[in-house]
Image (cartoon, rainbow, N blue to C red; front, side, top):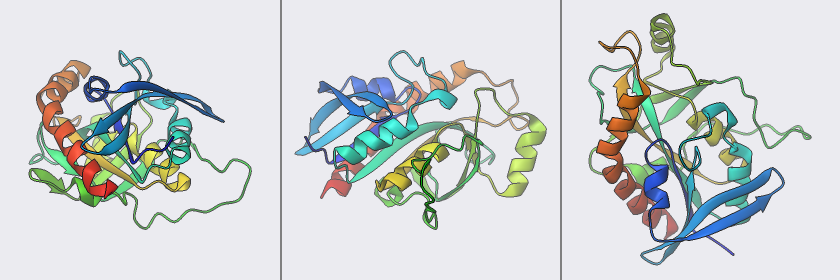
Length: 235
């Protein structure tokens, strides 16, 4: 079996992808079985994956990143596009802002890699090589995504420091995905969805419920962008 494109839905988007017409698909890999749905959309085959599993049960540091990348490589995916809920370090990028970041800073310290038994150094001059397909109406072009381990949110002084380092957005998943997909040879692009201003910039304490609310509000448009980008990349 072969697919054209893989889509990974984060918070609030995984469920939307799972609701698309499709059939369950289990893909065995050396790092575990990946469960998704095979979706046929306007003549292309899509593997739709829910990053945190059904019911949002898998925390960021336990997502099977390597297995997902291995499954997409095995199935011949031309690219993988993903969404991620993020906090914003820019006041002008408030909740609902959609951003296709151009670069990242990885401070997860997860050290997750395909290359545990070989000395392989992978170029990251272009961290999000599939990003241009996401540059559609209403999507901000650029910005730096800071990857952090989670599952806790950041402190105000951490956010201040990250801003000084050049970060524009903070999240807990996309840098690890970008790394393993690049190592797997599958071009990766990220659509970041701002759900809140980061700690110290927000006027209220951070709460996952506000993330859920914003993802419900922005989710439909995000899925439209993913599907349109998938068609562009599959050609």
